[in-house]
Length: 427
Image (cartoon, rainbow, N blue to C red):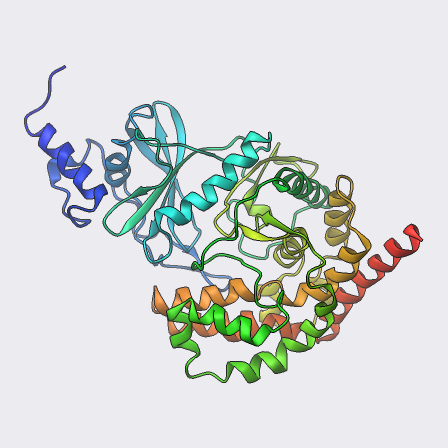
């Protein structure tokens, strides 16, 4: 094999970049593969509202991806980047390589470390071993599934089979059909069956993970103080808020309804972001089934009902539309999709009477810890005062408060009536 002059030293330099020996941006021009290009300056990502915004994280470039792929000789170099993810909390892209399409995601080290990604990848591996159609994480030449750079952590996945019907869908977009909702519910039950024997402990305190410790506690204010203490950026943000009064006024009344169910819901590793856009589909039609499950970044040990409530929160209520029109319109709640989601789930795993009764009590609380984690992210990582306020006032407090409106109460009443039917059928 003929080596071009300078190629060996260039490869050594880019390898050092990934190991953290030199800072990002110090990769010399000779290390950039032929045909490398920067993405269009117009690239935007999903924001906190309905409009696209400029990304907080620099998009992946072909040069950066091919630097990473030096650690993946079986994949070979990428010829082009064919798509950039609009998700806002990291930078992701699909690259075309000689071994097919792969998905690369880059995380800032303030958001994810190698051990944090390993927690997610361990859960994914367990589900794959049980036959679940989840994403495949590609290890590097040393067997590592997460690769550390100076300021970033990378992970590489094979592009999963299926049609990405909801690729551009914003957060809280509903399913396009009841058949999709039914299929998503059934797939979630399959995941819970496969997760039942996964014994890993709950994750350490991390940014942008959906845990369940505050309102699953006998002393929620004390538990929230522990949650805050483990996240310095959140502690800094809340230092000037009367959060104990705000939580006592807005969330504790819902907690009182949930309190009888504490310790009655067995713990389970869960997905915690069960939205239509994290699923790939058998085809683009309204009767499609689930082909693949994506994005385990929020996963943690919670309980099956937490995952179900999250799926309702993510897919059934159009929160962005509610915020735009005042928040009290029943047409932004998709009761037909809700019933289809739960019916699909219960074809494989019937809710117990305890779970059915607990679901309307948990739903107004299920978003809380992820919302607080968003506050920590916006305040401490990307330093957006506007988005931190939206995450705290609009999401953490606002979503809970909405359940006191006529529309919110109608949703809870719908779930209570389902629970009553379950109890009557069993009786």
